[in-house]
Length: 337
Image: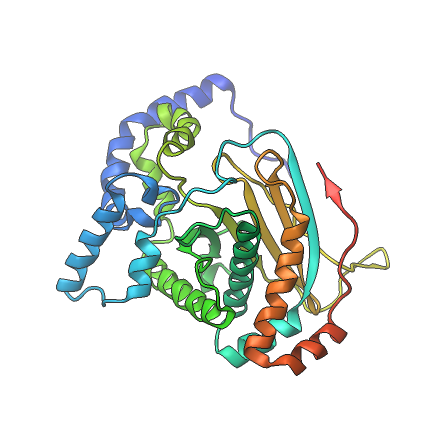
């Protein structure tokens, strides 16, 4: 079977020029969905006036009965990220650490507290970051703001190929010292962000880009972080939780023991925490810019400590001892790039 014909450079240039007159029409068509939800666009809250605009739009929607008052939704959509040491332009060097936590323990906490696995994972990340920053005398009084990828695949798209992923910008409870209250607040913040997100069209980010002419999109991408860095970062950290298989995987007869994710960092967001579940454990992979983060292995230790702390707070000390006996052995190898 022959593939499609590959267009030449002149043909591609012609297609691009032919599409330019349609750009204003696309922008007008995107306006009704994009403008009321500007704070759902990654980085928008760092721009002056956007949080105030969001509060004004939300107030109007409530008066019209379109949206109910919810403090969690308000905080999730108007929080502004504080400055941290890992929110600058990145270098070409990376640090990477990886480790495992017990998925069964996380699920036991989830069931007892009446939350989700993702709530527990984000609460663990918030607790680990709180301790890590506090140890370095860098803990901001305001909560950090995280980018949390979410799937927007519909029921009809479940069997199709390709990614259908959007992003939630949500504060995480790094300003809460008590682990049990931190988990409860994490649940409320994520619930508020999800409630707001479900009201936003899945193609919002695509629509939002319609406001940027293609000729300046590349320049805008390079300069946005530099401009925002003079005020506040658009967000602080990426926290991604990807559900994986509960049955073992094999390749040529060899069993897959763990699946440690290696993600990316970008200018302004020099820290990424990604976790993939597999069998009875959660496999964490932490990537950071080497010039901004001095040690990512202590973050793995802090994640384990946050799980112990939350286990005692929610399940009791006996559950912690049982979890210790059943937990996967921590990974000792180190990797640096």
